[in-house]
Length: 321
Image (cartoon, rainbow, N blue to C red; front, side, top):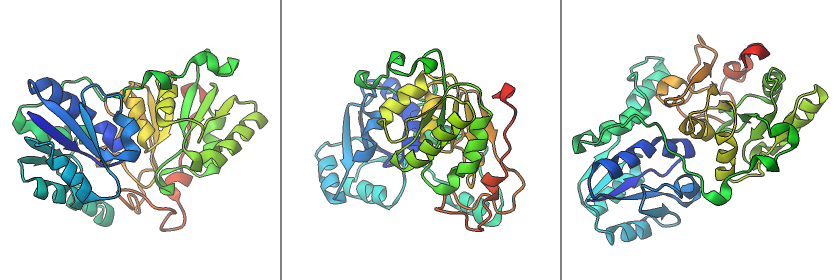
């Protein structure tokens, strides 16, 4: 059976599909699994041994459809379920299985604060999409495979980091998913282990400020924001002792490596089903706010202006971090 999986974005969502990729390949004898995503997310899966071929959404949806039609698939597994994936399925005209996004339930949670969401992780919901194929979760967690040339050698780090370190992933797709800088400083002041900061180029200024702040209070902090590829960041996560992270893609990469995760939640909530999967974790969140969640994704700034979901975060004493 030749199978196409579609999930266009983003890093965390794609990592969360990996148990399904593995299940389809291993449990459907002789299956060939292809994966369709955006070219910018190729790194997330490029070394995944269960995927035979990639197809990328770039400039033209209809160019992609033409490419996919030539493959003559037997089945489409749509784990994104948006307008573009519906157009693709219509033009391919073959059997498909489609992920239920629970948009109505999420809308009620965001707008009415009525929790009608199932108490299951999104990985389990992904598997509900393929359950009629007799494909089930194997209990082995998430997958993340790092190409050999992106593996970081600990000896390349400053000497004080080589015996061991924690990671703080300071980024986030939206500002309301990230601690403000003053709260980041408060958090790092409580951590008495050498700390590596990871994030994108957009996080480099905050990283620089945190590194300077660390020096001023005698903390060992190394800012690598904007200086590593995604796979190199994953390698730092893989070799770390513990990972502090906002609700972002590196949280799920950390879970794939079974790291202990301390996840910090702002406008989004774990009840949406995307908390760290099958790894030891602690949720840091401000409960009881009438405005939370304000979105299922996030905003550039707090809609109410007070940003209480992050400004009221409290961090425990160093002994427990």
